[in-house]
Image (cartoon, rainbow, N blue to C red):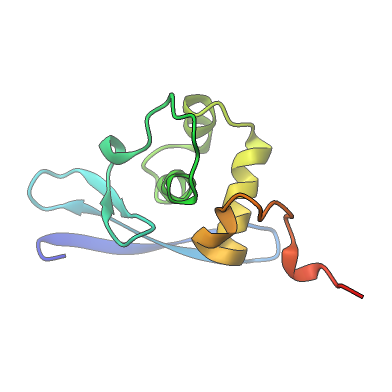
Length: 119
């Protein structure tokens, strides 16, 4: 990441004090604000999923969550752009905190899978 000034932001995500590191910065060449995407790539507003996206894979959900956490877009902007309820966005964010990108895969719909006991 030569030529990039990257800082780490700590953001309180839940009342219990859980924190998430989000790498953000500005590219020294063109001053575009970016975050580090789910695969380690630089993610700018231009790289975000299109507003009319119909098939949400875990990577795309993660891109939106990281964009909000890193300040590329606001949570309200994300919800309007992608026609998400606040509850749906927050469930994506929570799934990423608990299980990473894999928590956003279809089939991982229970919000607290680590609390389920099977007898």
